Image 1 (cartoon, rainbow, N blue to C red):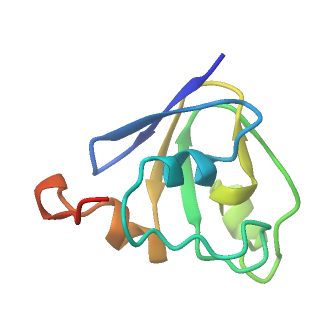
Image 2 (spheres, rainbow, N blue to C red):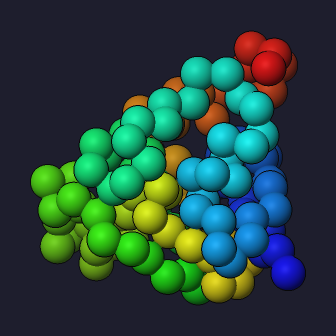
Length: 108
């Protein structure tokens, strides 16, 4: 079973399995220039804000995710796994690549 992940302010939606991180699903879209970083919760380039839905997380660097970030559900996409359909806002370094209007995005 997969869950639908909706990225606010972009119109982008994608399927993501519960055992797949949000970043892995996003990377599968094939958009050029998405910063992937370490994929292990240590570099902070894939920060998102979860605005709706249920999820589980794995360990991520406290250098990039503060107590305030946790309270606001601002997490690293590489360490978030959907338990239901989700909506999120892309923040930080991912925002420019994901939230660019489709007509202006480079082709994969």
